Each structure stands twice: as C-alpha cells, then as structure tokens.
Image (tube, rainbow, N blue to C red):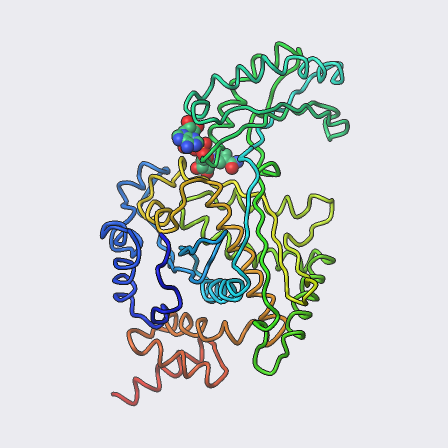
Length: 432
Ligand code: NAD
C-alpha cells in the first residue's frame, strides 16, 4: 500500500511502537489482524509451523522494520525488512531518500524463467544423444507442459530445452539437459523439480542413458532483476565532505569490489543485507536467492561486484544492480505465513516480478548506504548507537535503562559487554 504523505508525517523512527502500529492502521489498507501478524502479537503459530517443517517445537522471531522513502518505478512503497542487524533498515531508508531526489529507482525484470537440470550418465556416444534430445524438443516440452495445468492456464510452463555436453568431469563426460520453465508468480522450485522428474523416463528412452539428478538450478540467470538510480550530486554533501569527494569515494569503493574478490564478498554481503531482509519478510527462500546471487557474481570465472557505480554527464552519481531473483508471491511459505502475507499486502505487489523489482532496488539502496558510510566517516559511527543497545540488553539492561546505558557506552566510546556490565553494577550499587 502506498504512503499518502511521506515526508509530511512525523519521523517514523521517533514514534513509539504503539504509534507505529497506529500509523499502519491509518496509512495502509492492512487489517487489524494483519497488523497483529506483523507486530508479533499474532502471526505464525506453533501449530501452523508444525505443518511446515519437521520436529517443530515452536517459531523463531526476528525484528521486523519498515524501510521508508522508497520510490520504485514511480510508485511509493513501504518495504518490510526482517533482519537482526542494526543499521540495515536505517541505511536503506536513508539511501532511498537520496535516490528519491533523483526520481527513485527504475527497475525491471526478465520473464520468470527458471532452469531445471537433468544429469544423463552412461552414454556411449554423448554427442549423438545430445542431438537426439534436441530433435525430440517438441515432444519433451509437450510432456513437461502437461505436468502443471495450473501454471499452463496462467500462461506459464516449459519454454525451451538446451542440452550441454560436459566434456570433462571427475567421472568423465556426461550430458546435462536444461528445461527452461516459466513459473509465473511462484519461486518455482517445486514446479520445476516436478517437471524434470516427469521427463526422466522419456529422456532415458531417447538417449539410452541413465538419468541421475533432476533438480532446479539456483543460478537463475534467466530470471534477472535490474535496478538503477541517479543521486543528484548536491544530495551527497555530508558534514565536511564535499559532494564530489563523496561521489568519487563511492566510485573508488565500488572499483575496489569490482577488482578484488576479498572486497567483492563484503560489498555483495552489503547488498544482500537489504535483499535478504525483504526476501525473509515475504516468506521467500533466502538460501536460493543467496546461492543465485553469488554464483551470478562469479559468472565470468572471477567473483566480482553485483553492482556498478559511476557518474553521468552532469556529474551525478549513478548506480546499477543486476542479479538473479527467484522470489514468489504464491507457493512456499508466502501464502502460509501470516506475516509474509501481510508484508506482501503492505508492499502492494500483485506479481512476483513487481516484488523482485522492489527487492533489487532495496539491494541497490543498501549498497549505496554502505559505500557512502565507508567512503566518508566509516561504518562504525552510525552502527555503534544501535549496536550499543544490543550490547546493553546482552549485559542485562531492561526498560529505560537500555537507552541510558547505550548512550553512556557510545559517549565513552567503549561499546563492550564487559564495560556495560561494569556500569550496570555501579548503578545497582548506587541504588542499594
Ligand atoms: P509451490 O509448488 O508451493 O507453488 C507453485 C505452484 O502454485 C505452481 O506449480 C502452480 O501450480 C500454483 N500456482 C497458483 N497460482 C500461481 C501463479 N500465479 N503463478 C505460479 N504458480 C501458481 O512452490 P514453488 O514456487 O514451486 O516452490 C517453492 C518452494 O520450493 C520453496 O519453499 C523452496 O524453499 C522450495 N525448494 C527450493 C529448492 C531450491 O531452491 N533448490 C529445491 C526444492 C524446494
């Protein structure tokens, strides 16, 4: 659901928890039950969880925040983020505000095409088996199409077939068949796995070989999401830093990631801070998204940055992000988990592609927030105030004491649990 008056409402972070729930009630179309699911007062029950995985003993909660100021393809979006790490939600919101000054994020996705793989072994002549499979393309696609009439009716289903010869492997050559499958609004793993399992018999008959693995590939490079943004130069001024200095610092920081895998891993982790938080909040499979992102980052044979940063003719900062994003709004946990359902409604998305367009924009925003901090004052200053609260809680502070203790730790520039415990002891001695 779009915000009606972003910027004119009081600062969201200044509101109390109670006021934020109230705000959701008046500014979104979420019902009281849906707000309760997001607030943690209701939501996924142990009984519901018991139907989802094995040996259930309960549920596990994470903090859920809303990133603000996001404009994606001209539409204002409230972005739910489930994450335990301080500064992620604040960073995304801050960067979204910078991007908003340049028109927000422009994002698009390719068709939701996933790849199902089949490994075909024991072939005396893999090359001719490959051609026989390609000759049978139409029959194989027709058989795959019959597997999921729901997807077929919705305009999805098998699209293409590729056969690759792996010439050298630890067990010698074998064939790999790729079934390209349009999964519409699903993440698609179950749909694709079912289709490739169904085809195994016919593939064995055609090739005379033995089909072993039949499974989706998480390198979903046929299902890409792309986002770009322009940050007007003037928006980058920060304290004593000139906007040109900040812009060029961000570009230099990106160049480091583009050239060095040690930096690229951390750079991409920063992107995934944003991506995963939304993927999790919407009940999607974050391991699948993680696996796809990192495999894509290494597609040239050398692991590198998923994003790019540069400047346009006017000197504004421009950023892009491209990555595979296999997320759904049906299937998996997306419709089962009450908070995930409410999170999807909050964003007002009606297709999986729209969801991916928001997520890739959040990834780009998160990347910008991290690079800007790194290229100026460093990451720790912004981080410490929030981190100090966690340290205060871990040391045993409760209620109003948490904020007081956190402030003192930051003031002393010693955000450490031993010092936090020491202060708590001093305070309790004073009061005893
Ligand atoms: P699913 O099977 O629960 O739902 C997809 C099905 O929903 C489709 O096959 C279709 O029949 C139906 N459907 C109804 N409306 C639809 C619409 N508008 N668009 C598309 N389909 C529609 O889920 P899934 O998305 O196929 O699989 C996702 C699950 O698979 C996740 O829980 C994931 O964790 C799991 N998984 C992942 C892997 C992997 O990533 N390697 C492997 C196995 C399982």
